[in-house]
Length: 122
Image (tube, rainbow, N blue to C red; front, top):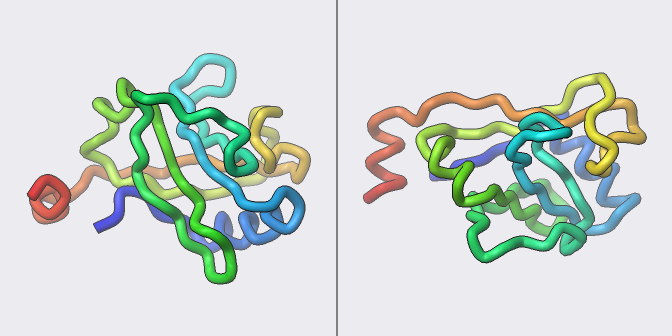
């Protein structure tokens, strides 16, 4: 059971971004200047803290696994949701590597079903 997934469009963009930047990682922003956007960085450029939660690794054929993290405090609010990374046209934060491409990553979420929650918590 996975906590985070990709749309085909996001996977396609990650292939392109990996060609430019090398291996990548995500950190789910907790708000402030960039809203609640999933921020994509070259792997290791964002320093993961001791309270950050690793939600899982996103897989795209031919790429190294792409780690997805969020702060522990934010995880407490989102632990009941499945997250899907998508991409849409428009300008997001200048901190995330997709910004120069004229697109931005965003999160689509849904609550886990009772069955999914049982697997994750079992």
